Image (cartoon, rainbow, N blue to C red; front, side, top):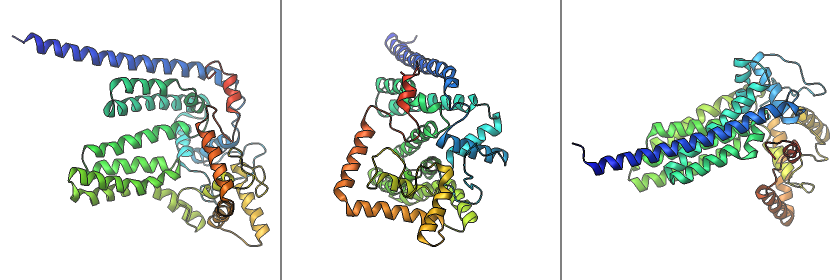
Length: 367
């Protein structure tokens, strides 16, 4: 005969967990309903079928990858994608190209997949928070991920944030596996996910400096000193396996070393110059531009300097302009950094490629 007290305890635990799962399903259902309504709204947006700026660049690049040839958007300059290093990180265009290759170029399909990716991010956040905190925190985190209007907005655009958010959370999850004990296989998974994340946002490679220090701390804490080096090497191998193809391709095409993308210098310059306001991406040095115009910017720079430049040299030129501004005008640079920090933490969504607040205002879901 089964004792009554243990049986009651088991039933109580099962009921609590089932209730938690029902709440999570309800949260995901709310998120799904919001996304379904927003999907019906999206065709009213003028850039739904005819994307603009960075979205147009991603769409054109993805079509070129998927089909080998495609027409340039009307009025856009040839970005010379086949003969230049990757200007933007290639992760999202290849992700979008995979969608086009599998499902065609129907404008609804990438949005639907990105919305499902957004819900997957909510589930992953729930898993993380439940492991490290408690069920209540996990459910609240999943709710915030499911209903936050910013996530919905970017899931409706041909841009990287939905993929970036998912890969960021996945990287934290795989790195977190190492807290259960150092194992090279776990480190390899973490390295692979970080490499995928870097293919979308290259500056996360700074984690390659922090991660070995953290692994060293875990090795000391768990007295697994012998596993430190194999774990770090496996982590580095995972990152390299994903990042190396982009670096090799860039070198093969140009004979010049560009690790992932060539836009680091110009982005750094736009954020750090005497005319920078922390938002816009235009300057007399470059004029108003989009990614399609970067070859023209390099040619203009060559004309002014009176010499030919590799993309690495052009990148170094813009980096030097930014560092010169910071060095010679430190107070202004600090003031600009403070302004950007305030913009980052403000309730308004700041972007240089569209009026997000206006789009939010005209959406019944986002508003």
